[in-house]
Image 1 (cartoon, rainbow over the protein chains, first blue to last red):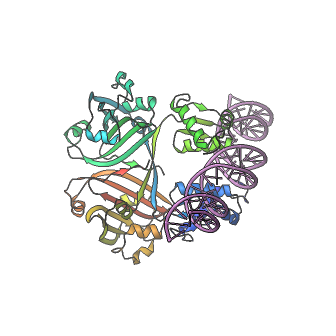
Image 2 (tube, protein in one colour; image 1 turned 45 degrees about the vertical axis):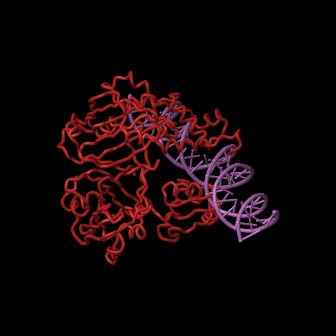
Image 3 (tube, each protein chain N blue to C red; image 1 turned 90 degrees about the horizontal axis):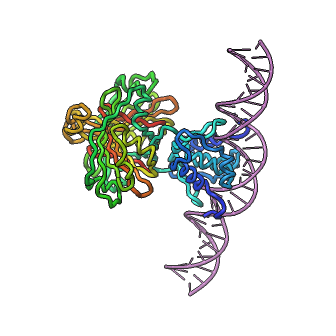
Amino acid sequence: MIRDERLSWKEVRDQIRAGILNRTYAPGDKLPRDADIAETLGCARSTVQRAMRDLSDAGLVERKRKGGTHVRTDPVTRATLDIPITRREVEKRGGVYGYQLIDQSLGVIPHEVARKFEQTETTEMMRVQALHLADHKPHIFEDRWICTDTVPEILNVDLSRESANEWLVRNKPYTRFDLRFYAISADAEIAECLKIERGSPLLVIERTTWIGTAAITLVKAYTAPGYEILTSN
Amino acid sequence: MIRDERLSWKEVRDQIRAGILNRTYAPGDKLPRDADIAETLGCARSTVQRAMRDLSDAGLVERKRKGGTHVRTDPVTRATLDIPITRREVEKRGGVYGYQLIDQSLGVIPHEVARKFEQTETTEMMRVQALHLADHKPHIFEDRWICTDTVPEILNVDLSRESANEWLVRNKPYTRFDLRFYAISADAEIAECLKIERGSPLLVIERTTWIGTAAITLVKAYTAPGYEILTSN
DNA sequence: ATATTTAATATGTAGCTACATAATTAAGTC
DNA sequence: GACTTAATTATGTAGCTACATATTAAATAT
């Protein structure tokens, strides 16, 4: 611990947060200036600033230059999600990971895929369908489009040995991505791949990635029944 | 902009990240000490530290005292999610928000609920079932348990006028929470409430909240078909 | 050889100063 | 009065120093 007299930024943060939680500062209220808080608590402004940044990152307060710091009126639950590569996810749970390429082809991307890439002139991409296994049972079925203009190297990769995701992560790190979650009902094809009944509810993790503005890939990961996404908090 | 000669921590961060992306520093590699990077780039160590903290928060590198900074070997897609209160979510999209209490009662919590609260001696809690509407159509059906030991005031709140969530957010801010997402198939009850067909796939957002270690509430929010969760990035 | 203590080292934090930046408010100007 | 410009102000950032903390590595004792 730090010398008792000195306040750590976490202590400062907790004091400010306590003040917000116990309504000393209600939603919408303006908090004192950093400098004043610093003087009140007997610490440096930099310490208050560090504390405030944390509260701001957590979505509790809003800060504006000259405008000061305000307690947010529309509280949000802000959570951090870690989506690991599937191999890691399975192995971390002590399971045996398996991978199986189902189909690989070149084709014209559907309109919906083009729209998700936001702006791309490319109309033909590589489509890869594959199955991830956990303990020899279907775990995730992925349906992926890879932009061969941005990632021409993918044409020479043997995707029956290594999953497209792992190759991409190692060779084409993205600079921007988009994630979305939703539920669908398994159609005949997905049901067969995952060895489940048609109509089973599935959680879909959809991820689009870019390098700058250039599209890399769009994956729809159809997770096996019972799959859950948890926050890391 | 800052005087050209001076590097901002974002520039430093971007340079380090570029080095990681272009494999100057491969996964698992050790990066130079902050002080060395600072000297190389001609900035202060504090600037490098600020940059490094950002990269560490983003999950790109791992830092350990004395151990130094390493590029993470298991890349994760780290995303930030904002889950607003339902009213805000609907209104932000320009929709008309509506709320309807369906049922409110005291009862013994199922074993599964007790487990999710992790450790609570309370066995009887208040159960609240309610419907959130968007543009007069069912939007989210919520099934909630509220710990009356932690939040006795809830017994005197008229939950037909205000949703439990909004009351809780204003009066009992949580200090810790847990989020999970999964898909289920609508059973008869949920199907009726949401006015959809039985068996429709639904995305469920489940949230447990605590004050310290004291349980506050557990909600299962059954979202109407077509509902999506998006990352804020 | 093994356990314990000590030293070395890289990151983390607190405090200070100085200046940058954004946003608002006040002061001019037409 | 409406528009422009300048002053004001609160947060943001960069640089510095000093010390705290955690962890590893080396030295010493058992």
